[in-house]
Image (tube, rainbow over all chains, first blue to last red):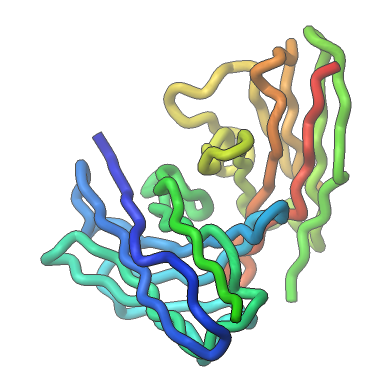
Length: 120
Length: 105
């Protein structure tokens, strides 16, 4: 069974840092491109970042570029998001999501999400 | 930056057909997918590559994409289909639509 389990969320002050992790199991993690997607309370989905299966290509949303860093450790079946210089508008549930191999667009599995709250 | 626009809400009677549009510049030249999200749950992929259904997704869900508009159609809508729906496409980065709340009256 495919599982994606996020962790590392919590309450952080503006300007602070958090590191999110996503533990993958039930599939060959190193074959898949991965994403972070967030959803502010009561709002829609916002794509945050993407990384290819080997980590050689990375993209970021303009809203997080220069502050967030995506990475992965295929030996540990894990995806990460280092979040620096946090702002109130970064408050959201953060999901890790697996890109489908069957399509050029689409995430076929999502984690349950981890809540990040940025507030003083 | 690329934008995908959806109607904020769609209402449908049980058993009827609901159509949700997603508009973007030359969207028909790109591949689109659709997600369903129920309250307190993670999104679920219901359509990919414009028209394909993942395994386990009801045949009541279908999709199309042409010109500037992708459309998700729910046939024979049931109460369990009440949810938020989001389209997604790639244009130098992933883009999500603004989301549509489907209400089954």
